[in-house]
Length: 251
Image (cartoon, rainbow, N blue to C red):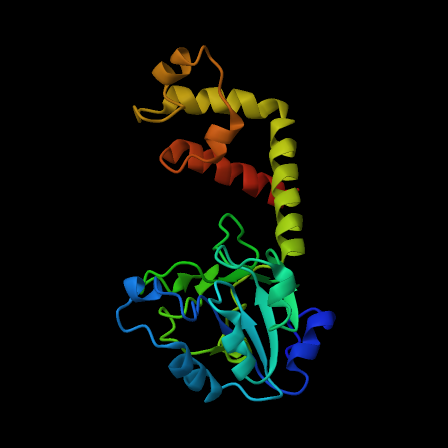
């Protein structure tokens, strides 16, 4: 059983493996435009049947093509609908579960057809992108059929290989962000801090630095803590920040 899944989805792995595939485009003439060697539906189903057995679950991430070919595939079948799929009610004649949009199946696993960007606390398993070399990155895994050589991929094996190992828990990230914001507020509340910022600016000869006196005058004397905090290019600012941290540690 895959314990990384929410309990309601763990049943998918109770008796067998969980396999993932996307963008099979069964009997879709446009598939040959993406790859002239795109397999025929019967050849593709025969290939999938070498891996998928009756107690397994197949998660299809959309753009099925003609869904009738799924009837020749054993196992429990789950569909995340893609942009080329239509009529969820008809698709339910060939799939056991049909979802019309993205679906979280665990704290760190998001299923979708199109890739979803801007989320750094889960792994997005998707299809849609047929670029052969775009297998994904730390936050994305692309299962488009031609990208994965038309083979189903084992979710359990991916997790064992470390799919989720570098993904921070959303609750941990939220706590860390709250701590960071509190640190910023505490520093802004220090009456001596602004004097030291001004001193830092007066000492800085880096012309590109916000703390440079010329730039300070150009900003009408307004100096933001965010600029100081994010300063990777001002050695004086960095040194002052270290002194602040050391002072906090001594307290």
